[in-house]
Image (cartoon, rainbow, N blue to C red; front, side, top):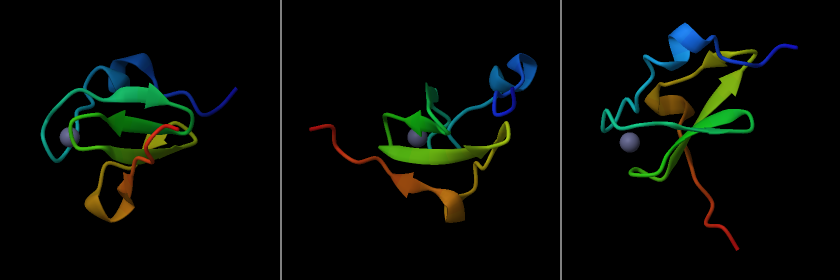
Length: 59
Ligand SMILES: [Zn+2]
């Protein structure tokens, strides 16, 4: 299985905008404070502003 972020790396990850906690989501990490989704591809999180996507409100 690929796609999982290594545990030791995951523990270090914070939102690059607010330094807040990130929540695991399928294929991404979500900052609920910023309402931003950071993509994760093959276990590599893209925590750069150009990659940030707004979180769609849940229906
Ligand atoms: Zn944030």
